[in-house]
Image 1: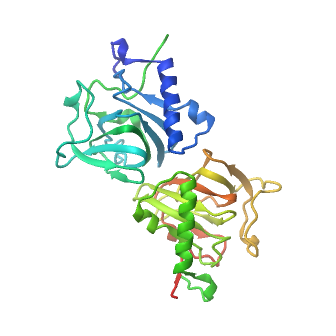
Image 2: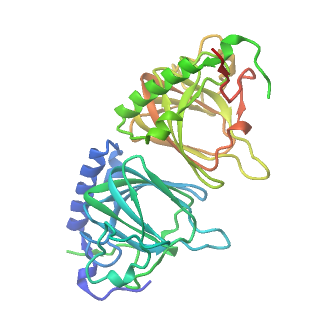
Image 3: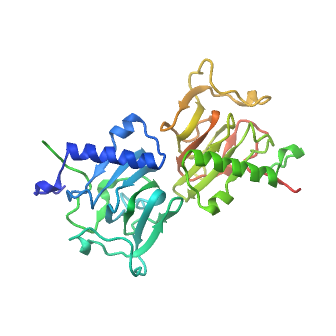
Length: 191
Length: 191
């Protein structure tokens, strides 16, 4: 795995703990209850860019077996999960995902006719890494199923969002991001 | 499929609509939002016994592809999903299920050491069709993953329960119930 050379690309433990506490506030708004262990283990993913406020997400993985995966995704206001796809792995189809909005509002982008005046604004300076612009707006109770290997990205509205993800096995390390500076796993900076 | 001959084994449209409305009240308590179409299509399963208050459940199927399924299960107070298992189908492993309690309390029973003084009480007259008694209590945020083809049954506590189910494909018609009088699909009585 490529190592980033800029210090800004790492999160401190304090930043991670703050993001976890904030994620719990959003989960509370959606009425979603976690065990204390789950709350302590919320994944904070800055995707290696060190700009969590704009690029990244917070995840609670409920289950991830060799057949099924379920997660809650937390997006802070206008936080963006950047463009990526889930390729075939070891002869198996790539990950199939259903995103169900539980709270807030989500702008999801997939291949197809670009939507005029899209609601999302890509993170500044990285606009060139967002290439699919067909917009799907998800409000609470609305969902969308992505077939394997389909490019997609999504951003929360001004209030943030909670999304339930129902999918086949997650193999995050095999995800292919359009932005070549991204790395999937967060590096923690020693303080 | 066997046809039941007693009229009591069918639900009227009115009974189904009342159960749907009641299920929505419980989903509201759990903060779960449905689209109007989902709300209108909540499945009311009396499992052919015509005694929905004691045996049955209410289901919202979010997605069911050839790889992944996700549902919400609603149980009214002390309502029981009777003992069954998910066998292999067409050379594939049976359904793998994770039950996550979102609201209320669930008493889940699986093979293993029988639990003394179990919290659930099987529906009257059908006690002989409940054969596994190892108890798992699930409170909000707690979950349990069942391997394929494992016998299981569950009952809500006194307040009812909402359970998210994350699983492989649902093929309900292949489920094997211990109670031979059960049929999985509800018959609607013409009024």
